[in-house]
Amino acid sequence: MNEIITPAMIEKRLRELSKEIDQAHENMVDLELDYHQTKSKYELAVARTRISLTQKSAPNGKNYTVGEREDLALIENAELHERMGTVEALVKAARANTIRLKTQVEIARSVGTSVRTSMDLT
Image 1: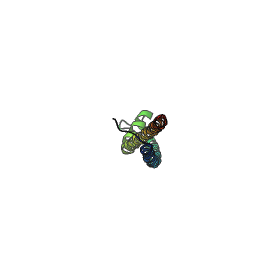
Image 2: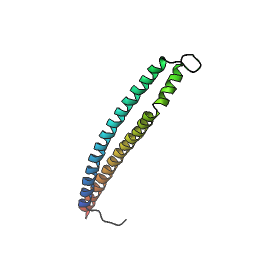
Image 3: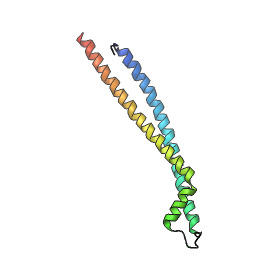
Image 4: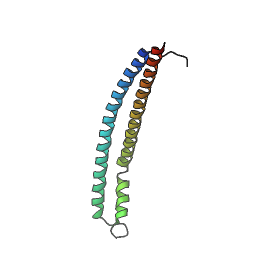
């Protein structure tokens, strides 16, 4: 890589990164909202299921144990549980992207400093 990097190139890259950071932030806000809404729906649905199971008996005629109610509530709300896991993974990916962008900004700044120093030496 023998390309000469100019201050204009660095400035252009920093502007591009600024736009990417804005987009990443908007995406993160949307994903965080989706995650918390999904989590709330899931927790409420599981609670409703557990409560409804306290009124029912297991096939053997005995009351369900706490563990059985938890398992049945999870199974009954599997779709919401899976959705919550997916949204949580997307939030983690968005956070990782934010860290990536911050790293790229720091690299561009370091290159900019190096370029300015090189220009002063010539």
